[in-house]
Length: 620
Image 1 (cartoon, rainbow, N blue to C red):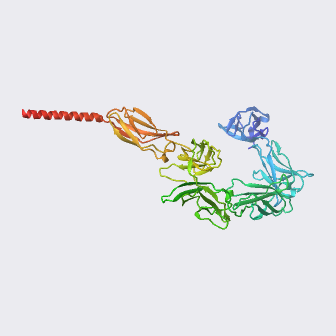
Image 2 (image 1 turned 180 degrees about the horizontal axis):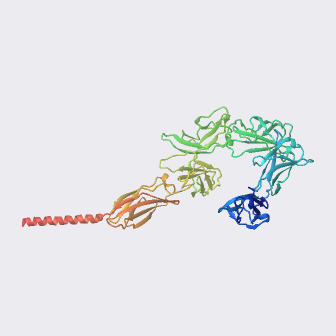
Image 3 (image 1 turned 135 degrees about the horizontal axis):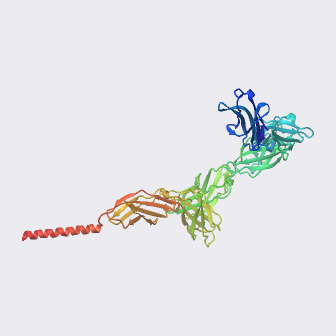
């Protein structure tokens, strides 16, 4: 109604600074306040604040307010008067507080060759809590600064149109942010827009092996449309599905053409991609081109196979039963997809194929050979040919064994094995391991060769699971014999047993109870059993216990009270913890067996004496 006016020193102030305000009341314009004393009060939003009041010129009432620290980013300051016992809001001023704008950071720009617009982005500084105006400024070498673009919707990027750009000339670009408390600018970026052009990716046209039967590949590629006139710098990357990382080829210069690269594996599929940029230090790389797959041609496998065998005389005399195992060749030796393995009794000679005793796609073979056979030969083949045969000498197992063998966990899926080297020189070591189970199982791939004869340690990583027991054996291979194996057992990780054995009562007397139990199945042990602990307690909670060696399967509890009920249970323990079994309830007898026998004997004697007395009385 115009009876009050509120004036503040400044409607926008730095956060935390003082705010002053004045409220002037003209009583004659406020209906109901023409008579009596006017009382002025203040409210900051809904919180009362105290001001001073005095009489002003022309019969007005004036109240002054000072807020020493204004710590709100936005608030409404109300001037109120009392009317009929209530506070009435008659004037208001809105106050905002914040900080001067912070300096924008990390300004970068990319030129789009489609419409030749320059898109710039930046990171905003700290929030000023005030309305801000953001513009991207640009200036040519001899032109005044103009507004290149204004970001929309609170984004931190915008695009300068082509008409404001000077291509192939250096321009100055920066971000300007303004609010009521000041202006901040980013670092000025001096660039030629063409130097920050991001090209479309190149196009891979064809891939082929050149020359054939080598490990080299030639790739033909074209530059993206619109970049044919530019001098380009490109990169090529490729990988096979099994490769952990990309292989990168750098330094490909030119507008289009071909590039060659060697060192590829035979018979392997590779995935190729390419990207380019202008030959300028500050230019941006294009995105990687769409991928193109190419499989190199195959070649006959190379290298020697790791082999291991076991032999024993057949039941039918004159023959030797052989179990031959070998490892799958390494990737760089297969030279393609392996089709199978061939075992023969003699090496392959030109124009004559030796007799084959085994042709399989597996990595093991069982066959019989005449007694006295000392050598067999195994080879691997693919669609391109067959490898040179690996000679397997069937040596006798009679050599000197190793002095010691131990295994420790490296992590929960691998074991580190240590041994003591023998005095005689060793050519190779063969390490075997098998999971210990209640039902016998055989893992034909659980072995490995250590070709370093001076080695005293090896790492087992294949087929190892936590909480499972493994038997490990190590064979030294000498020049003319195989050493006798040494053995050890190990866990890669242990925990408490899955459950404890079930207790059985074998016998009981008035003071003793003999208990027995079946050993835990090895699958349930989850570690080496370190001990069994027997607990027993009667009805008045007298608890006792005894620890038993893991090799025992029975225990006699002594010192029990006659005719008393006891609850007994067993705990099986490993180094990682223990597991309790269920309770077994038993009651001791009143008398021992010998006492019962003595009692029956005494009663029998008494009965005999009574019988004799009766006979005597009858006769006399």
